[in-house]
Amino acid sequence: MTVMQDLKKAAEVAKQTVLENLDSVTFRTGEENPFGDKTLLLDQSAEDNAVAVLQASDTVYAILTEEKGMIRSATHPEYLVILDPIDGSTNLERGIPLCSVGISAVPFTEHMTTDDVEISIIDSFFTDEIYVAISGEGATKNEKPIKPILEREDSRLIISYDTKKELVGDFGRQSLQTLQAVYDMRRTGSNLLDLCWTASGGLDAMIDLRGILPIVHVSGTHMVFEAGGYVLDSEGKRFSQTFEMNRRMSFIAARDEALARTLYDAFTRQ
Image 1 (cartoon, helix red, strand yellow):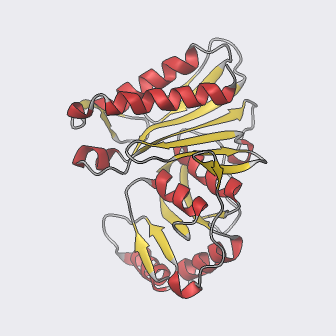
Image 2: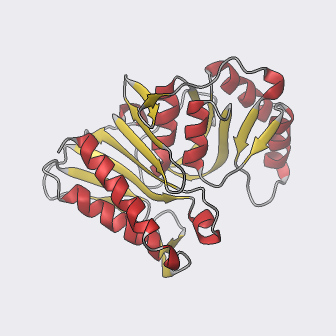
């Protein structure tokens, strides 16, 4: 199979594992993943099954996952696969139908960055949405090309904004400044879906500047870039990061660079 076929099958298996075991969504393993989160049994099962698909392939993969960290192959890998088997685990536990699986592939080198992502797939568990991004070829939703909406009036901007538990101190002030610069906000609890909706025009931007999001969410930022949007990091530079276990993502993903910088200026204003 091709890399695209492997990724699609792995994502499909992860999704199927979840949908067939919804009666166990609250069960936990009693362990924490490498990113410090308590592991759902279903998260682990979905990941295990997706990893098994990849390891059975003729293509040699190294795999970076949310629950196990880096899984090395016995031989030199051809690709690094980045896998988030369930994005929106808390939603899943509570019966909120906003969850997805995200998976990306990067040709393996010693110095890979998010700019090197070749393919990303994000598949929503409960809604009819499968997003695919291919480097240099754009992004699609259910095989139809997607683009951010650039014509929307600035006075009607709606963004997704991820908050900390307590909006206090500088982060609270900066968050208020950012939200005052737009018409309204949403927070679905599935970052990957919010990024897909930014890529396809439902949202005008998605902001997560908490500094806690694992690098396994890279399929979402890749989706925005390939759709024609723009992503800044927490320092106002074009988003580009290396793949390291302790790496955390902070970004402003927007319909275009101008809006990304407007929102960045609002957040950082003293």
